[in-house]
Amino acid sequence: ERKAALSASTGPGATSDGHKVPLLANVGGPADVPAAVEAGAEGVGLFRTEFLFLDDSKQAPSEEKQVEAYRAVLEAFPEGRVVVRVLDAGADKPLDFLTPADEPNPALGVRGLRSLLDHPEVLRTQLTALSKAVEGLPVYLEVMAPMVADRTDAKAFADACREAGLRAKFGAMVEIPSAALRARSILQEVEFLSLGTNDLAQYTFAADRQVGAVSRLQDPWQPALLDLVALSAEAARAEGKSCGVCGEAASDPLLACVLTGLGVTSLSMGAASIPYVRSTLAKYTLAQCERAAAAARAADTAEEARLAAQAVLSGE
Ligand code: PEP
Ligand code: MG
Image (cartoon, rainbow, N blue to C red; front, side, top):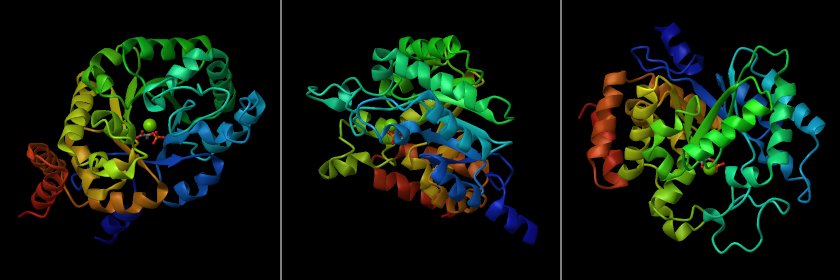
């Protein structure tokens, strides 16, 4: 029993009946790695590479500087997975040299993958740096694009990765409702999906993530958001591919159980949340998580969804 308790506090993520759900860390760079290792993260599920670009708003960091930063993160998880997101500039993460200054709606403008496709040299340098950083390391590298809207976007990103000679799995973030609705089509071009629930909520509810007055609509328990998660996870399952969550939703222990029940295959979050998510997940079977997920989706509001999932999991 002590062994079970210990593994629930330090081991890999799993439900009580052994259904594995890798628990990964969201990091912004090498400085976040010690906390991720300390929390027992099984790898990195979201490496936000924006931080590297913040020192200089006029130009991208050199290839050498990027190789160094990527390698420092990759080396920390020798047997693990590291999912690197290519630069997500624009909207809430503006960068002078990449982001158009005169957009009326920056969140709906040239951001994320769109800005990289407009500046292919920035994407190429990043992919080449990743290629060099992973050389000789046993780590399992995955690279994904932010703000993929459709199959055309997914293909453009996969083509860029192949042209850079990158030996990694290529994936697409699902942050736009169109990507969730047509996830199977996107999966014809890439090997995995990762749900960015922060932006997915913003675009599903037309509610700016930076505007506190509409925060009710940013609640990841919103049943409409759960429906889009379910669609994406079902598409990935049908294609025999993985579908993780790397948005804030994954850090809520109860919601992590619901996401597992919806068919999500890994959860990535700030390191501090990993122990709570691990111990909560370890209390319930996959079947209980599935029942909680069904109850949450049957609700009409975020609050009712939370209460319904809680009732199922506490056996009421
Ligand atoms: C998201 O949108 O959920 C996400 C993980 O990316 P970011 O918060 O960096 O936009
Ligand atoms: Mg996002």
